[in-house]
Image 1 (cartoon, one colour):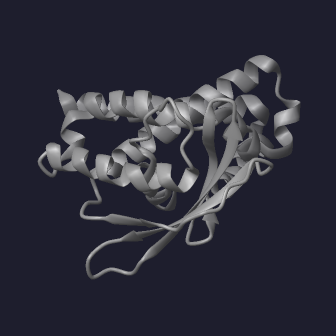
Image 2 (image 1 turned 180 degrees about the vertical axis):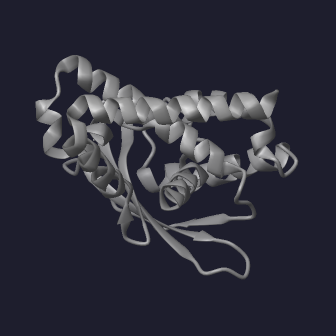
Length: 210
């Protein structure tokens, strides 16, 4: 789970401030512009961004989630088992997976500061629907971390459906977890596990706030 937390933090570092725009924005330009905004949030929270969880969640809801294809992410993470799920189960899986990712990287957000992001330019063409945007996460006196984002062109703009950190795909990491849960008890077991994890996260935050 520590690896997943790191993956999710690096996701929020470079994606958390994607704001809907009237004109299409190139994927690399979009990601390049967002690092400043998310780091500004850390600064505004006085070094303790976890101190205002509601504010962080509101930012995530309005600025992050619209730019991710959670249906595709969940389908890819579930793999071949996706076909075995009913429409209701698929909808529930997407909701629980989405909530898990939000909880995980919001928790990780407070642990890392002083990063900067270097984004590599990428060529886009009208006939290309998917691109990879390569970035480097930089922190003083620490090794650079490579993060590659997979984006797909949609009628609503470019949307992220996976990313890799040092060659490790977020989708691949979760696919191994999902596969194990399905083998042990089917789709319902996977849904139950995700729901229990989300409930435990929410309970932990409530205890911290009281």
